[in-house]
Image 1 (cartoon, rainbow over the protein chains, first blue to last red):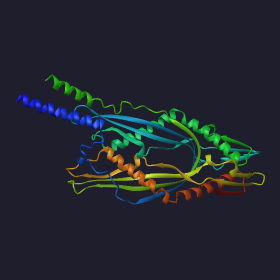
Image 2 (spheres, each protein chain N blue to C red):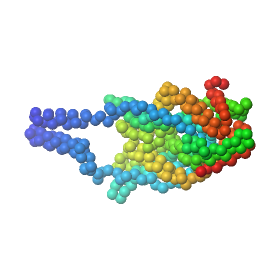
Image 3 (cartoon, rainbow over the protein chains, first blue to last red):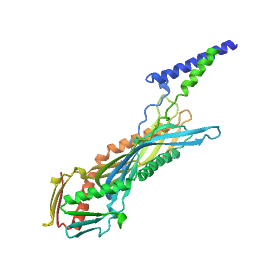
Image 4 (spheres, helix red, strand yellow):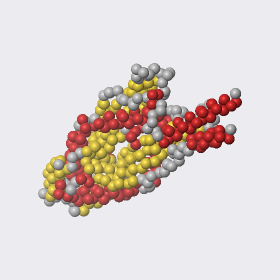
Length: 198
Length: 181
């Protein structure tokens, strides 16, 4: 009886090892494709323009970073923990929102154009679904936890960018660009007055 | 018996070699200088619906997301050449040939993707997180594919003209002529 049981266990282990090796080194051989779902397709739905906004955002710098976030939580009613690992590419656009420009922000004194620029800020910080990759996520993680992790990842890059001095870099770049632009517009001397000096 | 232990140990060793997230490394940030003026934004909403059923499967799966995307368009001043601006400050006149407006930002942020409905029959597997992300990616592609059918570029160019005219008037110009090339 013991011999028979041993043979069965050996056989099962050998099959397990063979399947594992096959999946590792020859993944194109679809052993279990019959149980797999067909590729997902979206049902046709309308696309609605909800809002049209008139903007005046001047971007002088973009900041791009690919990073990751790891979260851990205990498995409910069980010992141990489960990890959530997501990577994402985050883009920031930094510059001026000219809607914040004061009425008397532009003035001319002799041949010099003085522009009092608004406060530099992060105009956009975003990651689209195409930018994310799920490295590890068990079904213990709920949808809202997944979304929260993605938002945390974006905020992490935002904080990193501010620590890296992105606002100062963008402010300098914006001043240089605007000076060049207004010089091309026919002004001999252009004086950009930064928000911080007001 | 020794063989059995050896095979079992080998099997355990193989399955423990999953290094999926051990090699993650933070990449250095890339900073790029640019000169862009965004003048129009469209906020688009869309329902992402997947009905996963097939005649050979028992039961079905359905999932529904409501998503919002933002598209921003404007002018890239880096494409503006010196010869595109003809300014005569003494005569108070200026003529500018601007580059055409283009899509500068497309964003479909996680906070604007909300799961509204999910139903899975008993004999079917739940939607995995990867499948859910794939659905969102499909939605992103569909929205992007239809951007060109919208009037955002025309709106953006109109807004650029209004903005620059006001700015140049404030700077002292009286005759302002802005065209697109």
